Amino acid sequence: MEKSSSCGFHCIKIKDIGVKLGKDEILKNVSIHIHCGELTVIIGRNGAGKSTLLKAILGEVKHTGTIEFFDIKQEKYQNLKIGYVPQSINVEKHMPTTVYDFMAAIISNKPIWVKKYKDVYEKIKENLKVFQAENLIDKSIGDLSGGELQRVLLSIATIDNPNLLILDEPVSGIDRNGIKEFFNLVDILKKEYDMAIILVSHDFNLVKKFADKVVLLDKTIIKQGTPEEIFSSKEYKERFED
Image (cartoon, rainbow, N blue to C red):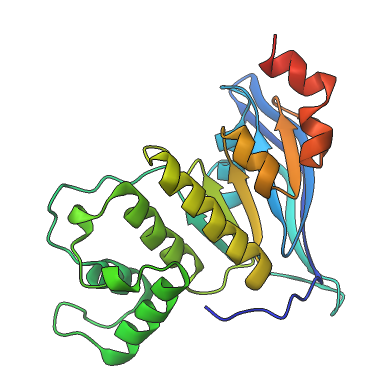
């Protein structure tokens, strides 16, 4: 993953997204504009449709509306490349597969079970270095702590320079120090790599510190704006302080 010179010329337009499950309307008329170098955090109560919105953006659920990636500088639409870090993955304790094996199987077409390829190894190590995780490359996936595993998943999600990084409550099961470290890494991706990021989080203190934009979702967008605007709004207080 290469550092960006902060282009500021990319805009992702999520326009009028709607999702129905049978007769139930899960999402309605959701529109968000996201720019490169910006962290957009989606908040809402349980059942508000946060995970469904992420699945719609990822193309995992049928939806109405459109998702467009517009290059303002070149004045044209492009294909949107997305990186994704889920809430968790199932990893067996003491699973012998190394971080290198795990990542190489995802990013390379070479038969990794035959031997280690120097170019693949160096590419993986360089990307892990962004997340202070290069020392984990030969460690078994099953022996990683929760925080270490999330660093590896971040590295996988960003190794091919996505236009948009989606993080679905990625700090579940991580201790307080690990959560702060994770948010600091996300801040680096935003500021130094000019990455557009969507994050679902319930840690409102860290959201206030790191978010550029907060979207309050309750099946539709109730309010969006700066952290200060959202957390001082009556719409937020009605849903989280009553």
